[in-house]
Image (tube, rainbow, N blue to C red; front, side):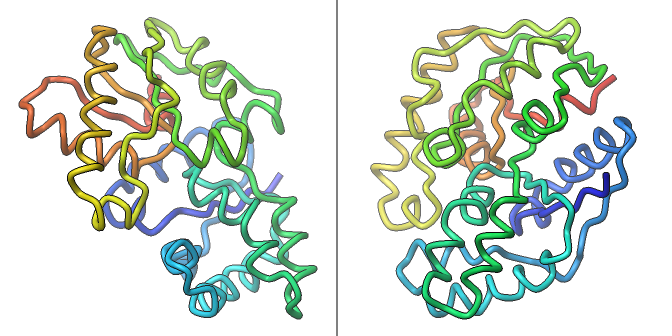
Length: 238
């Protein structure tokens, strides 16, 4: 099929390797990939802050650019939840309500798309390391994506997966939450780091680069050798 990627703004600006990895994997599986460069944000920051009119101004452009897509795959549980869950709420009662609902049905977070839409768990990856997994809040609680990432990691050759105790605990980022409440955010992130340390993992894996940015910042300040990495980057290794 022809797959349209939605690359979140922070991935585009700071973690481009995540998007590149997704392209490699999907093309390896035989699909055609397109990535509209003119889509730069889903409108979530304004939406979460309560500025829905401003959010619609941004999200309306996304609706227009993606209306003809066969399937939309998103490099983030957070932005994935925005398009799939919150767009219908954002545009409810407007002239774009039907478009928002139609688009929501075509949107998939990356790991969920591979496992539950394509039926793929083994993409031929090899990653010789011990890893643990962090469940981002939106991917877990809004999209219900607990199993897909773990099913994919289970098929990666030479990878040792160890579940951490607080896998489902928030890392403390929460977008603007980290800026408004830095002390609380830091304390939450330190709990996440401690839980990861207890597994002896070399890498903390997640579907959300925003969560990984938060955790990696804390790891660096603690001068830890543990690194963070997006699931797509592991799956692209061969």
